[in-house]
Amino acid sequence: MEKLEVTFRQMGENDIPEIVQAFQELGWNKPAHQYEGYLVEQFLGDRIVIVAFVGGEFAGYLTIWVGFPDYAPFVEKNIPEISDFNVLPKFRRRGIGTQLMDLAEAEVAKVSPIAGIGVGLTTDYGSAQRMYARRGYIPDGRGLYKKGHHLKYGENVIVDDDLVLYMTKDISNLQP
Image (cartoon, rainbow, N blue to C red; front, top):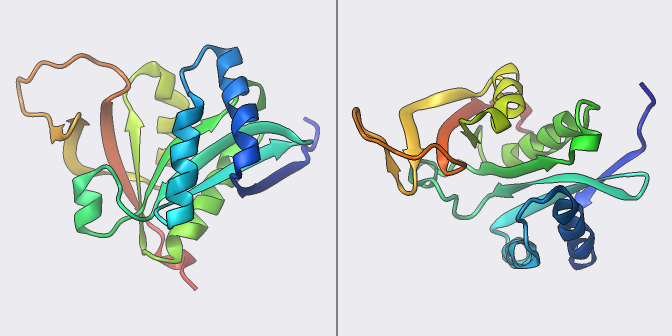
């Protein structure tokens, strides 16, 4: 497999049209206002958005909620959340996702000994599920989560992208 020339940096305003176009071509609903919101949160210091480019072409990104994660147990313990992790299909299985996660964990380690992440439970998330397990993420022990609450035994839900298992990883060995 050829060696890729990959560059990583924080997302800028000029990146938004290319990111939106890349996801539109895949038929994914990732509108410009999502990234414009991320940019505001990045400016405020609440979120970091790391983008990857291969030979100048957008390849993927992830975000780190350092301010106010969506998941209350992470907020209570000041655990930054790695979220919205995407590598375009044509760039997968080439180490870009691993490098994005390495960078994200290094950023999280600047402020916390624990990194948090949520993963969807459908087959679409199979690669992410395996990656997080290989990287040492373990379920937080609270079970499945959907739209603001942990599911209870016997509860019926629709299985979709909002059904999540949250996990954490001790990254204290990365702290300076």
